[in-house]
Image (cartoon, rainbow, N blue to C red; front, top):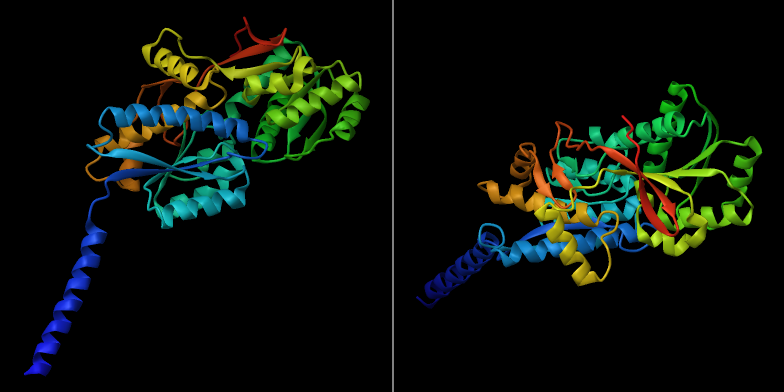
Length: 379
């Protein structure tokens, strides 16, 4: 009899443990997690920090308004250091341990391209607020970006240099990664197609501190213009060393140049640099005005590159999550394809069939340590 009771007690204990484990696994989480992979340290950290600050404002707004489906959201940040291997490890952690259905990131194109196959296989949405390499358009059904492709920016830059500035001979000095090489290839192709000539293409690595060898090779061919897609830290070094060497050629850069940080680093060596940026949103738009006012009040500075797209990325994912029956990667992916004219801090966003956005561009010039818009229309 005692033996029978022992068996019953053991069964009760086993069933209780199983029920407890099952129950815990099936309790709905109190918060909705969204993963974030950004370069929070390293040479691209200025953009990662900008995006993070924009995201924090979006997070506050969403949670103060009741969250998603009555639950608050939580952003889980991972640092990629703009290193593809570290980005992949961060994504795998977010997917396997945190069980996130969507990840925002990275800023660096090389990191997005490295993470894309993993996100695609896991059916987890990956939304980049800053990657621009053209190959991202073909990276998979779950890969989105609310940032324009280099395929558009590189072509616009080539037209501006050839048609508006009248330059026929160009050199390219670019960061040697997916971002820089993507812009280099598009600019090279477009400039040659227009009738221009690319005299030389020189690259530099992230973290490199001496570009004099590349600059010497460029000066030997005597170009009209130097096209420079890169990151703020290295571009500032290029400009300072070019000034020290007495180089007075016109530098033409990309949206990556549009950050006050580069003026702090390069100082007067940045004078005269021209760069392309997407056409800014209407400052009188209530969403744009609200974001900028909150950003300046909280961080005591103007929004930088990726601040607004970081903010919009969180809002876009939240928008999709709110509208699906069950928050899963496939459901979010399907909903994002329906996004049309989403009102954001960076302007309206609509995704095409490749998860890309298309925007108009303008050009700015550094004058007296300020970014001054140029009145020119390039189509």
